[in-house]
Structure formats: C-alpha cells, structure tokens
Length: 218
Ligand code: ADP
Ligand code: ADP
Ligand code: ZN
Image 1 (cartoon, protein in one colour):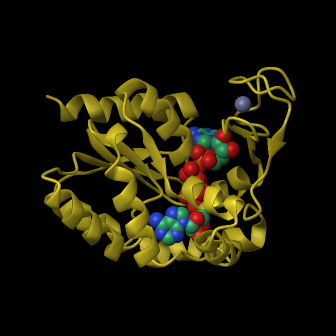
Image 2: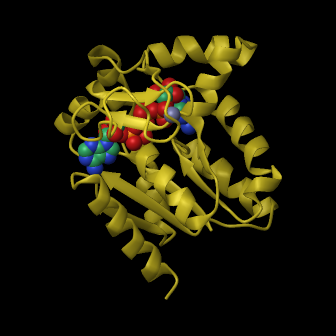
C-alpha cells in the first residue's frame, strides 16, 4: 500500500502517519524529519536545508526528489510506504509518478487532511516532541499522560521545532497555498484523492481515515 498524506503545516499528517504505520505495517517517510536529521548531522545538504527551513520556504525539488528516490528504494519500503510531507510541489508529484512507474509500482491513495489556517497557527504554536524517540505532542490537544514524561519511551527530554514560530508559520502557509495546493487537482484527476476533516479530534480523524481505507479495499 503506497499512500500520501497531504495537508498544510500542522494539519496532523505526522500524528496520523505515526498511527497509520502501526496499522498498515508500512513505514512512514517524513521528509521534514529527514531534513532535520540532515541539519543535525551538519552535512552539506543539512547546511543548505537549514537556511531554507528557517525561512519557511521549500527545499529545492532536485534535493527532495533524490532524497525520496533513495528512501523508497530501501528494502523496508518493499510492501509500501506512507509519505508525510512529500510531494509539496507539482514537480515533486510528477517525479514521484515517474519513479514509481520505473519501479513497476503505483500510488494507491492520497489523503488530504483539511484544517483552517487559524487552527493551524494554534496547533503549531503548541507542538512539541520527545527529543529521544520523536513522539509528537501538543500542549493542550495531546499532552503526555504524565506531565513531563514521554508516553512512548519514558524520556523527560522534549524539543520544539525552530520553525514553529509565528513568522515562519506565515511563510510556510503561503508556500502551502501557492506551491502545494496545485498538487491536489493532479491527484483528483487520477481518481485517487480523498479528503478527511482534520478539524475533528485526533481519534475521529483516525477513524475517518480508516473508513477511507476500507472503501478502497472494497
Ligand atoms: P503536521 O505533520 O501536518 O505538520 P502534526 O501531526 O505535527 O502536523 O500536528 C501538529 C500539532 O497539532 C501537534 O502538536 C499535534 O499533537 C496536534 N494535532 C494533530 N492532530 C490534531 C487534531 N486533530 N486536533 C488537535 N490537535 C491536533
Ligand atoms: P510541516 O509541519 O510544515 O508539515 P515538515 O516537517 O513536513 O513540516 O517540513 C518542515 C520543512 O522542511 C518545510 O517547511 C520545508 O522547508 C522542508 N520540507 C519538508 N518536506 C519538503 C518537501 N517535500 N519539499 C520541499 N521542502 C520540504
Ligand atoms: Zn519518547
């Protein structure tokens, strides 16, 4: 099963991809996480990406396409993948179609998670993650069960993303509307686009995604 989760920054892609990978037994591939790992490593790519991400802009298609090409060729993607944060431009979407075609594979489903811009700003402002295992949280919508302790790994160490501030969020939203929204009709035309209401509670979004997946296998 090859799935894409699309939606603006803060829509809940990462949260839902995390839950979905445990149900479908295919890995989630987050290009944001891949880039943040590159930044941390101090590689050439990381240094380039850091500047662009801090400005809330998109890293170039060339870089992103080769990152994804390498990643989906690894053995753990043999039975599929969940893409979180890719594609973000029409060029990336077209390149993905070409590479999957070359691999004799295809996309099964693209799920758009819709959330209004005002809610996104609040979600991003309250977002944090476990520094050890990466589990995602929110100050009010998804606080750890025991304050200050990660539900998943028990760590006491949490981080907030550098680009999760109001100014950068505005550019990221603009990039979404200008560069990513045009990807939606591309998939609609292919008949594989479905939308879920991302304004609902986390568990209800999960349930709606499950309904979409069930309909697909009918
Ligand atoms: P994305 O990967 O699309 O940027 P995240 O999954 O990181 O989004 O979610 C952004 C923030 O909003 C996180 O702090 C997450 O815990 C929270 N969140 C995710 N889904 C919902 C939801 N349906 N309702 C309220 N908060 C949510
Ligand atoms: P979000 O919460 O905005 O969905 P991500 O973690 O997916 O955040 O992405 C963080 C940043 O990494 C983006 O603002 C962008 O600079 C860069 N990025 C991630 N994926 C892509 C991509 N497919 N194309 C270009 N830039 C990307
Ligand atoms: Zn943890």
